[in-house]
Length: 159
Length: 159
DNA sequence: CCTTTGTAGTTGCGTATGCAACCGAACAGC
DNA sequence: GCTGTTCGGTTGCATACGCAACTACAAAGG
Image (cartoon, rainbow over all chains, first blue to last red; front, side, top):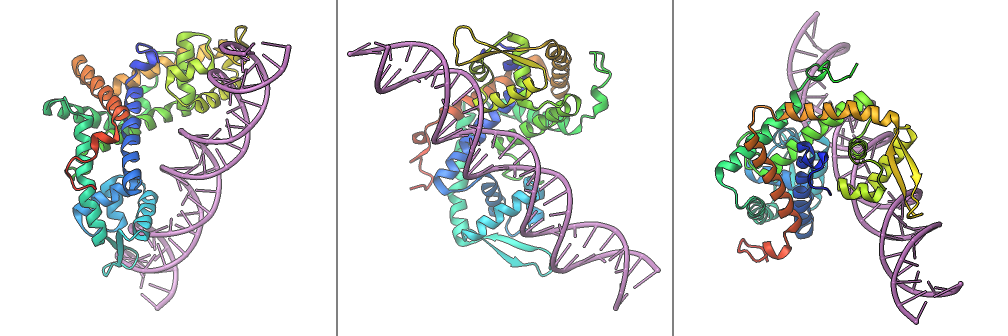
C-alpha cells in the first residue's frame, strides 16, 4: 500500500487497521491455547475479577451486546468453566461464577494478556500510553456523541 | 461499565472500543447520505485519488481482502459510479475508474471524511496526533510480527 | 387480585466477512 | 506449440455479529 496516500493518512483507517491486527493476534493466541473466543475471554476476565454476576451485570461491565454475553456464558457453562446458580432475589436471572477449573484457567490467562499488552506497546513511556488512552477515549466519545447537525450545512456542497 | 476494572484499562480493549465507535459512526454517515458501505467508500477514495486501477492494485492499496474489493467494485459498477474497461496489457484483469457521477460523489465525500476526522480528534496538537499514529503503527506491526515463540516459556505458568 | 408495564434472558434471522475452491488467462520450460 | 504453473477475479460456504421479536418473571397501579 502506498504509505502516503490520502487513505493511509486517514486516522480512522489507521485506527481500524491497528485494532484489527491487535484483536486478530489476541484472538489467535486465545483460540490456539485455550479454545476461547474474545467474548468468552472477556466474560472470564470480568468474572475472575468480580465474582458472581448476572448476565445483565456482565453486559454493563463489558459493553458487549447482551446476545454476545449470553452466547459466551452458554459456552463457558458447557465447558465447565462457569456455573449458573439461581438468583434468590430475582427469578428471571441467574448468577454466573467461575468453577474451580475456570479459576485455574483465569490465573493462566491474565498474565498472558498483560504480557501481550506489554509487548505490543513496549518502547513507549507511561506518559505516551496515557496520552494514547486519552486519544482513544476522546475519539470514542466524540464518535458516540456527534450529531448529524454538527456536520450538515458545513459548506462543502451537500444539500 | 466500571471505569477502573482490569478490562477497562486493557489497551487492546480500549483500542477495540474506539475503533468500533469510530467505524460505526463513519459507516452510518456514509450509509445514510450516499448508501455506501465502508469498503465501497475506500475503493472510491483510492480510485478518485489514483485513477484507473485493477482490483489487484486496489487490494494492495487498501489492504482489504480481494473478495471485499471485488464485491465493492461490483456494487459501484452496478450503481454507475465506476466502470470497468478491458486491460489491454493483461486479459485476465480490467481497469476500474470512476464515472463522471462517481467523481461528483467523490468530491462530496472526501471533504466530509476530513471534517469527521477533524471533529473526532479536535483538541489535540499535531505532535500528539503524530504520536498517536506512531503508536497505532507500532501496535499493528508488533501484532503482525509477534511469533508464538516470543510469548511461550516466559515463566507465567503455561506448560 | 388482576392488569399493565418493564426487565432478564433466549432464539431466529439478516447481514457482513473471509477463506478456500474454482475458472480462465498468461507465462515458463521444454 | 504443448504442458504445467502462476495469477487475477469470482463464487460458495461457513462463521461472527447484532438487532428485533419473543418468553418468563417482576413490579406498580387500580
